[in-house]
Image (cartoon, rainbow over all chains, first blue to last red; front, side, top):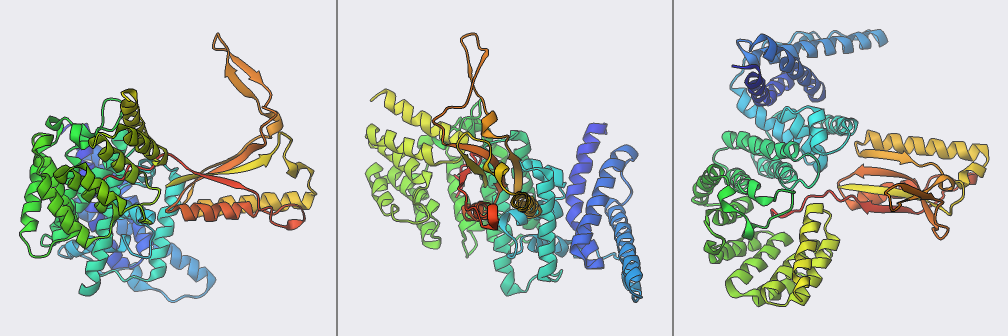
Length: 416
Length: 131
């Protein structure tokens, strides 16, 4: 193996082992925040030593041992500090913990870590940062650069998140069955946010940001392996794959947005599509259907159409109908209007949009204007389309999207 | 979501604070320092800078040969940027809350200045076209 591929191999391995090692360390020492620091130190040591000296015989054991040594040092320092202050009792059981060989606990440990890092007491941005570091094994610097904030800012965010976890006193074990569904929902939401942050990245070095989507897919696979029977986990993984498959076709040479209808479909990643489609097919045959599964099924219908005119819009409309009954997400209603326009004509879509004008979550949102512009254009009312494209351009906070919307308005305005 | 919080200073005069009593200047400066530290500890501060006074500002334009033509500031400008914070927060409401805190920085006599802070979103939000 040459040194470059060894580096890449070590990196993959470390990411894979990070949550297992952290799980083992937290279970043994109890202190999540300190364990997380100790595991980060172990990962950093491995990243510099392994490519140089070769992999140890048991990489997982090596990391656990190094992390445990750091924890022991930490506890000794803590003890010494306390001893200086008072004559504290020796916490011998913490300094010399029993050996841990519970490989079988790995499966649960990783899940418990997910639940912990996506705990409802954390804000979304804190949960994202903590998940990427504790479960994903990314360094603070990597996370900071992916989110385009200074490293010190991200370090503070992570450290506060760990304090919140500590203060909330969440025990390091799986939540009870009742709670588990709800907590899993939070985990999936965090993974979804990480994915879309990377997928729709509008600024910063693109490659680096793309890493976030890849990381979200990798973490979704980790959850899916542990909960293979959960339809929503499979649904989210499928949705990510089916969306990511279009990445190469989604932007032009200078980063401009290309909408689904005009994308070069030969650039779509067929491997991701077939994996996503297989996941959707397997999950739709089960009795309970959730939102991620339906979103994935819709994405699959788009991805399976060789040409835009082959898109199965009636089927997509039926799925949006179902989805609309399950969720009050205004984005779903917008997409429903588009699907309706594709099946029954633009006036049907425009009619559905009228009901959204009073939706408080959509009021002033650029998507409402963008969709309306698109449907007016379909209906041949260029003047109204220009006005709404311009209104949408003024409201979006994404630079590529603003440029796209302004160009659409200009294109129609030129022929008025 | 990133927001820029801009602190405005009226007119093209030197900053008013320069004419305050010593204790008021000290209280104001110490408030701003604590405010900055708090933002940085909460993991929300992306960047912050204070700018040199408007009396030193120049307006620059390219001449025909591309060389800079410098000019004094436009006399009609009523407000000048005195400093800014860029924060990365979970909601617009949180950005407004931070702005209100900065707005209440103490002035002469210790009373809150309640100065205007202009809050604008930084163009960086991704287009949310997935769900």
